[in-house]
Length: 266
Image (cartoon, rainbow, N blue to C red):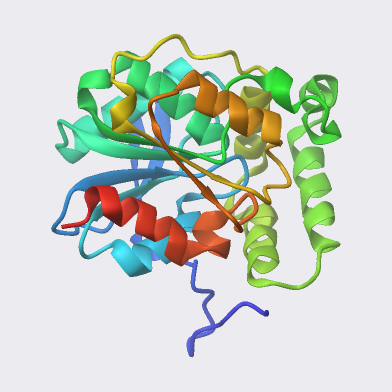
């Protein structure tokens, strides 16, 4: 279906007026804080997109939960991202929070739990992976291509690829992101982070505080990668959605939100 447009002409994900930016260790951390009354949940998007990718969670859950959607900086190193997020939590006055990472962010969110485990209440690992090697069969994650392709060229490649898809709300959203809402250097850094990914060492938090969400129809994360995540955290709760592709927070938001509220809702 075509993307809905408000009477003012804005896309439903156009939340830029609500985004604040703070500098952490010399890097910008744009974020949107709903200020909800309930438990705090940090939302981290994958390689393509800004914090606005979680617009459906913000609309549905933002009053009952304190959702903090984050557009993290152009940094491929998971340790630096983890420490930057800790600095953002300090800035927001949060000693602890639950953390939800999608795709690449699900990968580096594990490093946040590794380095700052005492600050993690529940860790949601969504449509993600353990190592880069699991993804190399997909030419989109060829390390040589990712490293050798310029940021602007990579952004144009992804924009052209998305443009060929059938019209949908997801297509409109991604085209908006790839047309400047997410800058090219940020996009490239995230893909570099993906192809350089190494398995996170054992976490200092128990598996019972980890929730895995994946989708049976994910075209990006193969079954072997999904199985590897479950094997890495064998005692974690695992929820496989029958549909949602690589973006269940958009394509199957009700089911996705239900998993969140089952753990954090009041």
